[in-house]
Image (cartoon, helix red, strand yellow):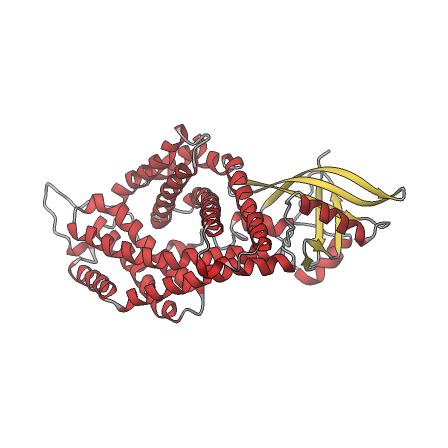
Length: 467
């Protein structure tokens, strides 16, 4: 039957999927509040840590478990379980599956190692994270920084601002952020600096994409053109950073021999990164990036910042942000919802196209969060979950294709290093990526329904109608 468990686990490390940690677990009475445990062994352990502070819920985890007891010499030694884990937050639910084997009092560690070998023969991958850590990773962290008032006030937008003033404020904000990371990107000490600069460039293009039909200013098209080149240059390096990061994460869970094999692919991608990195530096030092800065500076110099600078006639008043945001946001939502007729059994290209439209919707909701209010935050989180889910699908597909291309033709320099052992390890990695693709498609409805369904439409239309 169903029950609520309260568990405290130490942050013990994992070696090849084998966890050694202290664990305290108790069953709570029906209707009990898990954030308010007043006595017992769990309270005794966490009480000194939190004092008078309260616990807060960061997500909800529901688990369906199928158990089997394994015996050695007629003594139960290992509890084997297959878990279907559903994690929920902000109206979004995601699912993952896990096989867990727990050593019982009469068991020996070699019993777990025998099971581990059997799991590896089935191409199952050991994990170092706990269920909570995996759940939070799927949901994008603890969620404590989402929808804060400081985020909402970053542009200083008001519903009565003119369209041109709103566009100017948002564009200036992201352009300053874009330039902020230029020096750090040149130094190349932290890959997150490049990531942030690329995100800023994409936000700039999203601002232009959303506002351009309202502005009817030919110069805006030129800004998009020069920023597109910057986004591409940054993206080529960032894509390789992601490839190397994902490969390293996969390697952490493999045996030492396999880790050595994976280094061949890591070195190949690292060499490609050096080349794209040099291309990026040449671009930043060159005339095209100088032209980008000149065009944006000239545009801001001639484009009015404040509504008072806008001329208007009696018959053609300057429209306000609150007049156009409903249609801008709803148009972005229409583009997402339109996929409902083709998404079933769709090819990866269709999912990728949906991801792009979901990104436009997300940017629209975040861009106008100051005028939409806090009620829109939960809807934004649903769209973010959809976009990230599709991003994982896209990343695994692209990586698998690049991996296949490397195996088919590594080139003269690398051909001698692709030994039979390396080939076997890389093929296992490719199967791992294909499993991710299958899982993302299988669980797609969990992130699609909360966005495409009636509840989302009603809540979004209610928010927009009040502007």
